[in-house]
Image (cartoon, rainbow, N blue to C red; front, side, top):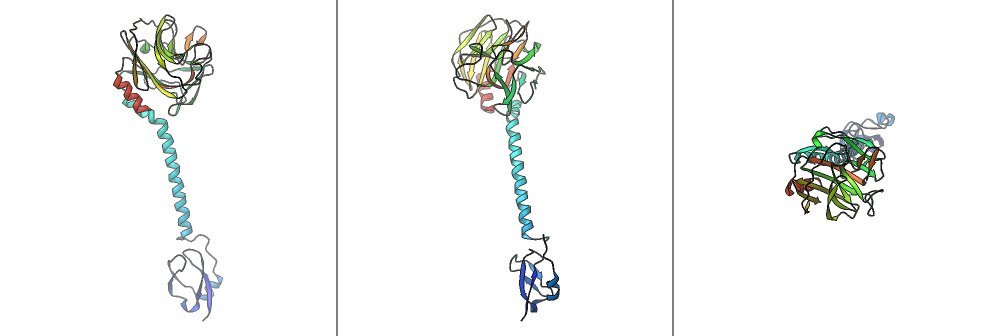
Length: 295
């Protein structure tokens, strides 16, 4: 019996077959699909199909493309989730939130409208999640806020994520670096040689005996209610002696620095992210919940 060759219309592969099978249905020995064997004369002039409609090659290409697309969506989704993870947690923050500066490429306050202005070498960089504020510790840098009435508080909570830029200093020009500060007579919260402090700016302060001595991210907070001041590091409370100044608010406030008449000073050396101010002293369980939800 004579044999001839033809191309499978399903997978495009060449098949050798006996002429006696012309016009009959067989299963392709390669793709196992049912096909009709052509006449030998037609097979001789047939052109090999480049991409058969139902070929396994095409199916494999489509499967690979689908897998790559799905992987891309997962990566994009995870990146988006990581950037908004902390902002989703914002909805679970306790009552009394006055302002929240997240540093996601803007100095805007997403809660109270107390928007800031970047000055000097202050910039945005890698934050606890997404972006945050980055300061080089040099005078003249910071985020200026003006003097909003909603921040003129006697009892309050200030909380933020911070990351020191150096283990040897907290500012390039002073032993103290500010996390949030007014000018003279307003309140200031920051690090003094790594130890947390609350101050009536230019008058006096109360300082925690322990502090932050590494360059990792830490959640820090201070609450003031009357004369009771409590500091928190990573959700753990640290009580200090009574401190009951009366703050005055005739000067502007800032993030990461202390405003002056002609610029800023005692600028923090490092990064600050998700800094929030509440109009009351949060409880220990509330502070712990913020830390747990956002870490």
